[in-house]
Image (cartoon, rainbow, N blue to C red; front, side, top):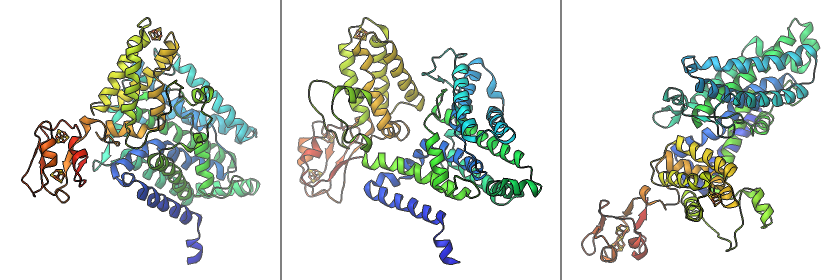
Length: 485
Ligand code: SF4
Ligand code: SF4
Ligand code: SF4
């Protein structure tokens, strides 16, 4: 019995999860910082929410690939409703109605008309994505821009942190795991789901309304997708019709990796929850600890290939950067060039690049909010679409590509008021480590502002009021006693 437990798939997933923590934590200690780790949850929590209930669908022998488009549909309905005013008077659960209708519609065709689940939900994903675009036409904002400016009462849903650290999304995930676990593993309804997956005919003969059971799993899955749409919109502060566009593959992977049989009849909520965490932590850990997006390691360095991945080719040379280069600062550096070079003929480039620069400057000074990050991204797309010539059209590229591959650095500047590369002066403090300082006085003699004091052979100290963070003292100290924090 003990051997069976040890070898259970859930236990195996737990070991993988622990290994991820050990490996990523050893590679980069920042990975284990609670605020960094918990902040990463936002990037994959939608996968966790939805995968829990797609498990129900797949245990019945079905599949649900429409959930991701319901995320976008819910988001844009919230956005358009907000623009028209007043819908925030409704409780959050009211926004799940669109999800339950979508799920019931697809579930009806699958359970009562006998159409294949793959066909129905594939059609559903196109239908709901199209419907989301249609709804976005009612908005005054462009579809790619999204709708922002939501009230704090809505944003608080995702901003709340238990003990100031544990995000509400994680708490909600735990509650959903408990609900899904009880439903699937501790109720008659859950047993019916398994029985339908093992042998639908036998389930029918034993008195189970199999069609209703199948339909209900699609409703649950769609409601969880709508709920994920609410949480994502609240977190990002922006409603977009394509919000869940890249979730489908991750959701299905999490369910299958969690031990659910694609042919139905077998699966577990705990397995799916662990698999979703394994996938989410892997994605976050790889980008935080190894930085390099390995899929582009062998990309040919030519104009077309670089343009395709959102980069561009100049004529100067190849710049290699490491973890000591701040990605927000480097985006600001490239944008400064474009601001200077803009001829001023068209407004998106003349004014837009300046506003982009100001937003980046705000981020590097630790004064920006997550709303500013949304504005930054939206403005980038607006400039790309509307600038007259290539200079303006490519100006936002450095911002968009750093946002794509190093978003965690932007978030560290905004939420943690921290520059991971130790470059942005406003977010730095220069400190002398007393245990390493030999009292040689070299730093004090070279400090241009007289910020360092101390006696010979005694630990020196820096007056942070006088320090201009020039870094001279760090270069001069031969004992590694001065650090940036
Ligand atoms: S996009 Fe081209 S035309 Fe428009 S302001 Fe910039 S440089 Fe001038
Ligand atoms: S240069 Fe280094 S060792 Fe010398 S006083 Fe300054 S901090 Fe201490
Ligand atoms: S960083 Fe520059 S200003 Fe600050 S203590 Fe060192 S030498 Fe002085």
